[in-house]
Image (tube, rainbow, N blue to C red):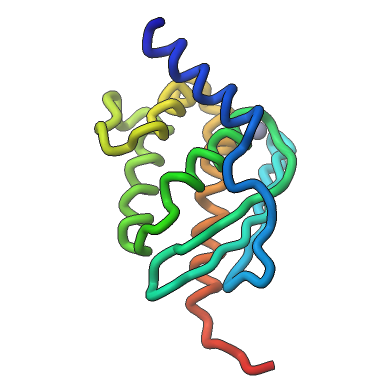
Length: 147
Ligand code: ZN
């Protein structure tokens, strides 16, 4: 099995049985993501503890790449700090847009999405979950309301 087959297998597996699928209630923050080019939609809920992303769930409908990417992301970011997530996002974005020809080893299974760089129209599918996560994290910055 070459690397491309392995990557394809990881994407298919995460599309078939997405990890962290569902909704956290209550959640510390949430956000909706929509990629009109493909029709992908996702809703993300998260919990923060001491500025770490202690838990997250996503639900929604979309193409195989968008679902697999959200599933892979959910595993990769859980337990991480905001700064670590920001750095990871930079690297994933560089990989998806073809600016990183050899994904560093610490990206782990996220490297399965490296092939997306060959299909520019799919980049938005794969990055939708990251934009949605960033939006939810920004919202979590807002002062806590007592209402
Ligand atoms: Zn899509």
